Amino acid sequence: MKKAFQHSVSVIMAFLVLFSTFSFTVDKHFCGSLLVDKAIFSEAETCGMEMEASAETSCCTNEKVAVKGQDELKHQFDSLDLNQQLFLTGFFHSYLFVFEDFSEEIVPFRNYSPPFLVKDIQLVDQVFLI
Image (cartoon, rainbow, N blue to C red; front, side, top):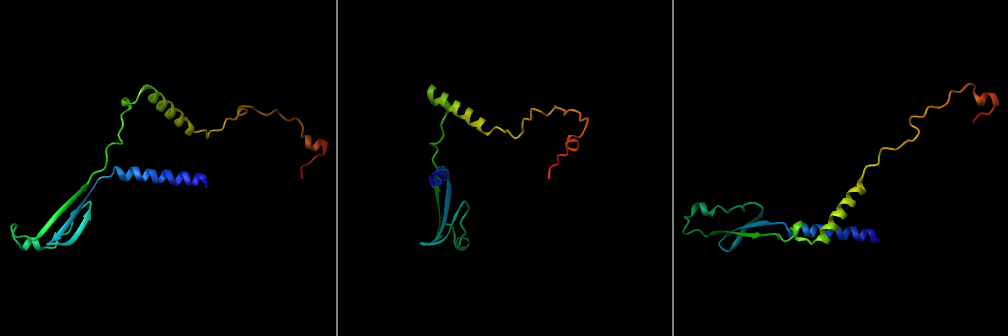
């Protein structure tokens, strides 16, 4: 239960950091005071009225709202003091060695050849595995 809670909190915090640094633009198209269309990341579709009317007497307006994400999460390694730098380098160095690949098994008797059998001991002693 405790581990599941920690995992869910860490995922929520990761998404919070992701969305707080995320920038986007909202585009709105109004015809008079009526909102016709709004779009995120693209241009809003128009109602077609601005083609017929001249630019001075047009009743349509476009509004763009830009939401800028924060840039304060960027840190430089040089801005840390010596103790913090030593801690981070030691932490990352030890963390990388946690994921070392030990898939190759060490077999100490790989080059050992068994002795030559002169007689079959099971037949001589009449002992058989059933």
